[in-house]
Length: 215
Image (cartoon, rainbow, N blue to C red; front, side):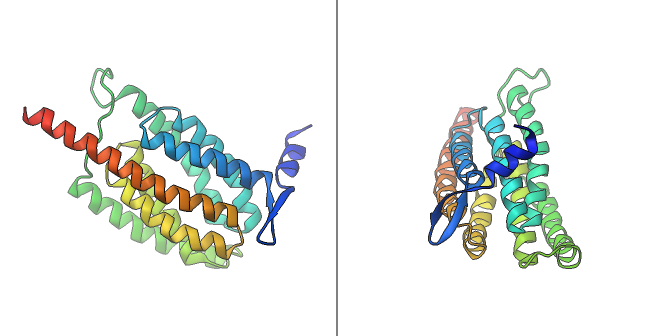
């Protein structure tokens, strides 16, 4: 079986949910995505390779569903995953011997992220509206911008990256339901719960780090 045959097989219906066919791609995206977020919350390095596999499944799924910005976003996620993987392994010290600690997002980072988020959302909306057949250009662009901002924070272990993921998930859930990707919408409900758990866990690490520094 060659790659094209494998892709065609993954996109075949596996079962029906709420009257809509669910493919192998969506099922595998569901499982790998849930596992990835759970591993991120636990700060486990395996989240990066699992996340890359999830990105590949979602490229196929979103292209088929006409969510072109989300499909393109997965390619960027793969590149960022390589950066995040390296950063988590080597840490933040000049000697690369200390694990990367959880930190709060600085004011400068927030200013840069907000500017890039607004400009990125506007630019991607125009691009999708004029160059693709996207039926939801603004919301597709908004979730793309939020996800990129959150991924940057995740790569740097910034606590507030979880708030950005939560904001993105709140938009993703009805967006995927609207596109009849019901299993994926359900997955993002799970993501939302895992993001809250991750926020609590990472906040605990920040507090513990502050106690150590103060001592």
